[in-house]
Length: 115
Image (cartoon, rainbow, N blue to C red; front, top):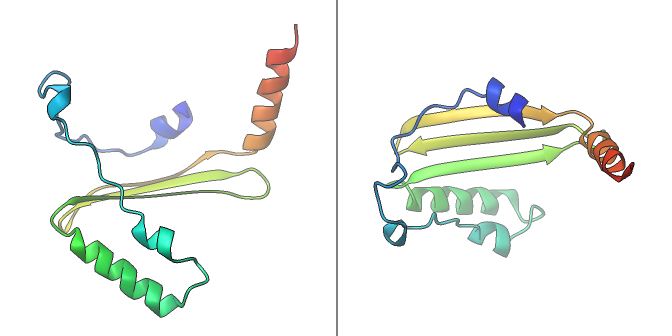
């Protein structure tokens, strides 16, 4: 993970700092996965496109954060993040987190078991 953070081009945000807002007043983030829950990737592509565009439009006045991650069959893991506020891109990054993550985890687990 440290490799990811050292290679990522994250921009600073101007969000609340520790102590600026009492924890009881901080609003939790809203995650809207309604389209993903109601429809599958096998649904009609034009329907999915229309639903996604309608959903994105409904949040035009909010900060939008899009994330994605995947793992290939040979253990390569990649992540991406795109943040925008209105029409302004705030941050965008994509990175391969690690190669052969399965082997790395397996080796770590085996090392931890060795006395």
